[in-house]
Image (cartoon, rainbow, N blue to C red):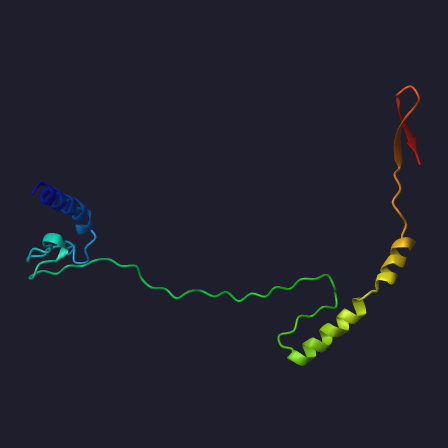
Length: 132
C-alpha cells in the first residue's frame, strides 16, 4: 500500500510541470466566455484555445566564390570540361616537376647564409664577439 501511494505521488509530481507544456493549454484569447482551459491540458469543450508557434522561414544560401593565388594572369572560369581540366593539370605538373639531381644541383649553387656576428670564448673564458 505504501509503495502504491509513493508511486502515485511521484507520478503526480512529475506530471505537474508537463501540464504547462500541453498543446491545448489555457486560453489566451481575451473575453473568452466559455472557460478556456481544462485540467491536464485538454482544453474545454466550449471555448477556444490558442498557442504560439515559431514561423517558418526558408534557409538562406549565399553565393560565394573562392579565388586564391598570386599569379596575375589567373582568370577564374565558370566551366571547363573534364578532359580540358585534366590536360591543363598534367601540363602544369610537367612544367613544375624537377628531378632529385636538379634539385640537389640548385641547392649546391644557392648561396648559404652566413652569420654576421660570431660569439667565441678566449683562453681566459671571456666572451669575444667578431664580425664576418
